[in-house]
Length: 498
Ligand code: BES
Ligand code: ZN
Ligand code: MN
Image (cartoon, rainbow, N blue to C red; front, side, top):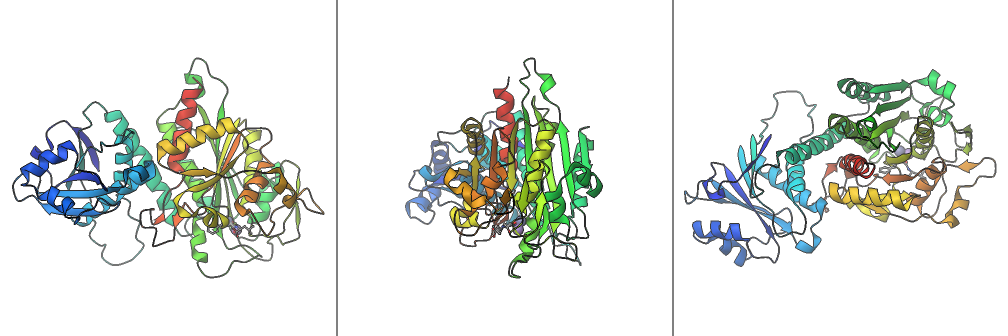
């Protein structure tokens, strides 16, 4: 899908449809009023008569009947202005493009989103491109007709901002790539297949890539990752990609940002087997790994002046004759002993070894993305990722990145009072407790392996995949959560280090 900026009058554009943003309880903007006049007042009438209210995801096509050059006008809703943040802005444009595709439009013009304190261009482009997402079908038989928009034309942003448009397009395409990987069935996207995807990305940008398999993992003492993968016939992989961008700046400050992803290609729970209901969703337990892969792809392509590594702990959590058991005690790569209380709390185990691996390879700042706890859904639901961090300064970057990326995060507290819940009678730590603060506890376990380095943990268990039909303005199914957050964080830190 091509995206272009025009300065021509919208009424003169040769397009299938011209889309006009409308917020609830707001009058039409100036440019829209001029169009309304040309259309004989029909737009104002739809709004005045509350046939169109401007609610988010409301999309109404109106025939232009030759009064203006575009064949149709589309009124589309932004919701209430005071609710409009980067994530909802993207969601509104995701829906606009999705609906326009179903109507068979090939050329779609979108008028500027103006009544905002924010610069909307990036969010509009990202939302629009995310709206082209279509999960790959694995059905046989004749392929269903795919309706795609050829060109989106943005009116009112001036011209000369093409570089911003291209960057936003890349961010959204990276998000869609994450979504595609999330969707991939676990018999296709195995730990080794994930490693091959990583290798492909590294080769494309000439990046250093290292894939550790069972023997190397054993040599390195990565027993937590090995333990989680032990029940599966598909051996685990510890994937590391290294991008060197810091040498491009004169005052390189030595920052090495590690993007660390949970890459459980399927989480059956292991011996602590999950219930069968919805177990199939656990094919997306590699969503964090997918997000960091997509992100480093963009970071490298953009040649950001910052050193970045991606580390993905990939394994399949299965029961089996060689699976680890509840009660096992495992020595982690950094030497701490862990009592495995529940084999289904595997994410924190593989991430612990992944953090150790990142530190061994020179990480100075770490962010991990993981579908870690069902409790995240209880705590904040699908509309945001839950987070914890050990460093306010680093967290400030993460929070700002999230805002600018339209990829929400919400920080939960780490209270020392909870630390006791992680203690074991027979080992240094136990991997699960039952009771309270499940998302925080998962994060606090991982924190034990962050050394004294600034670290943030993003629990995307709920945000990565929306299963709630009622939450219609939150992306349904796989969302690619965390992808744009990581890209934006690298961009912010590249600027901060200069
Ligand atoms: N991958 C799951 C978390 C999850 C649950 C993601 C539902 C998406 C939807 C994780 O490995 C897990 O099983 N966590 C346990 C932890 C518990 C045993 C301490 C959970 O949340 O129940
Ligand atoms: Zn899991
Ligand atoms: Mn689990």
